[in-house]
Image 1: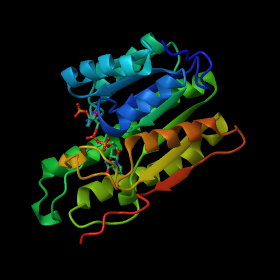
Image 2 (image 1 turned 135 degrees about the vertical axis):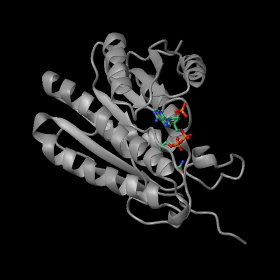
Image 3 (image 1 turned 90 degrees about the vertical axis):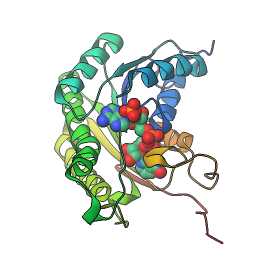
Image 4 (image 1 turned 180 degrees about the horizontal axis):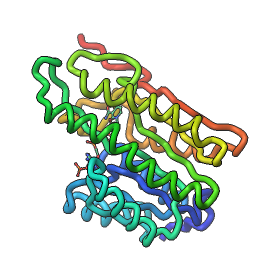
Length: 246
Ligand SMILES: NC(=O)c1ccc[n+]([C@@H]2O[C@H](COP(=O)([O-])OP(=O)(O)OC[C@H]3O[C@@H](n4cnc5c(N)ncnc54)[C@H](OP(=O)(O)O)[C@@H]3O)[C@@H](O)[C@H]2O)c1
């Protein structure tokens, strides 16, 4: 068993949305290895259960809990936070990571595609933040970290819905940071370029040039390690040497 009592997050509680795969999963593991107790969600119950078992083993910690919850649904978000209250006692960190990508020319996007992307990536982050802020105000502070994208600053072909969701997330995050900084609520946004996950149907295998999910998790830890006087409000991160088609 790993000794996590010395980790800098020992005694802290964290909620990570979309923790069953990819970037969210790496963040859950990194937080747990630093001693945090972590609750995460995903929509797929089986995927969540399997990830809990695997992550507990990898982290050498039983303080990892999962629940099936869809961040698009206000009542499921409420249930996620009630579950986190029960398991963690206290929430200090929220990582808004759950996200989907549907990439099609604007003229081919259905209203269902549009809603799925906007409601997950933008409305979901709002709903979870609202739950966290209510608790942070009562307890005197906390941290919210949004996993946005470089697609929140630069348009890409096929990205009308995804760009809109991430441009919107960046704007919401900046306002949230200004709204709540004097409540000791620290709001940060990470804007990654391509990360090696199965996001949006990407295949693994040809991804050695991409950012590793663990590198995003390391940035989350860096944000949380900063002294109280200093807030990392936004971080852009990209592959050092993006793939060049030959
Ligand atoms: N990969 C990249 O290149 C990249 C680059 C920049 C930013 N990002 C952002 O990073 C975040 C994570 O992406 P990833 O690459 O790790 O994707 P991923 O491997 O597809 O994982 C997405 C996670 O989110 C969960 N999820 C999706 N919709 C959800 C919903 N409505 N409610 C709750 N959970 C939901 C998924 O579980 P279920 O399917 O079971 O719900 C899964 O656990 C996203 O916000 C994405 O936009 C990714």
